[in-house]
Amino acid sequence: MSRTQRLRGERGFSLIETMIGLCLLLIVAAGVLPLSLLALKISENQGHLMARATEYAEDKLEQLMSLAYGDVVSDTRVFPAVTNGGNGLTPGGGIDTSAPVHLYVDYLTREGALIASSDGKPPEGWFYQRVWRVELVGSADVKNCPTSASPSQICLKRITVTATVKMPAQGGNGIVPRATVTALKTYPF
Image (cartoon, rainbow, N blue to C red; front, side, top):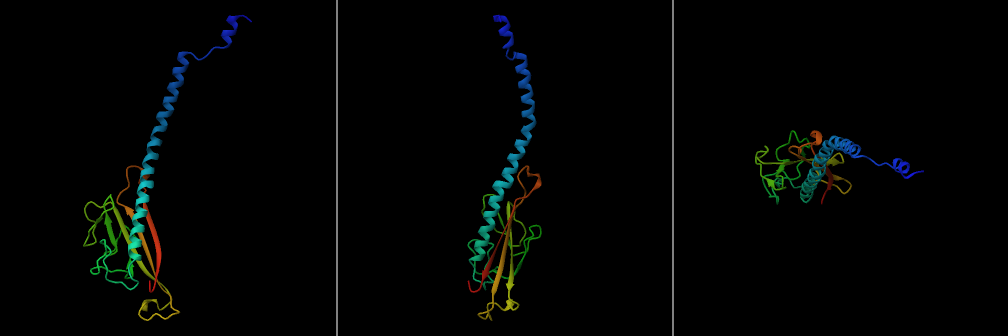
């Protein structure tokens, strides 16, 4: 086998073939780029904002759990809670963020600072909304807890807090980050 025949059998890619391959690679990369951007937006929306909403829901739940079982006057819409002007752990409220119940809702800025809202309407500049519900659970005579609680009677309140974001960040297909946490509070604690 001569040297010329051997070189023909070992041909590489020409410059034109390399350019065509790079153009095809560029077209594929340009097609995948929007998916990367969408994934980045969804990660921001469902990752960071969901984690913050969960953190704020847990914070509100801890604040409510720190109240006495029979507290019906503390205002937990401010921090620290004041001992008048609120409803404490009075049964009521709701977890529907589209229809918040007055005295069972508060609002936070994007940075997590509490914004005062005396009339229950959303204040200017809010980004996170927290709503909560307090329910009596336990024995049939639970409405008399703790005033006439017997040792065999179970006095429980279920506290549920839902936190959500005003509007999702760009992208995320309109999925609003939302977190709900629940705990039971027992008498006398």
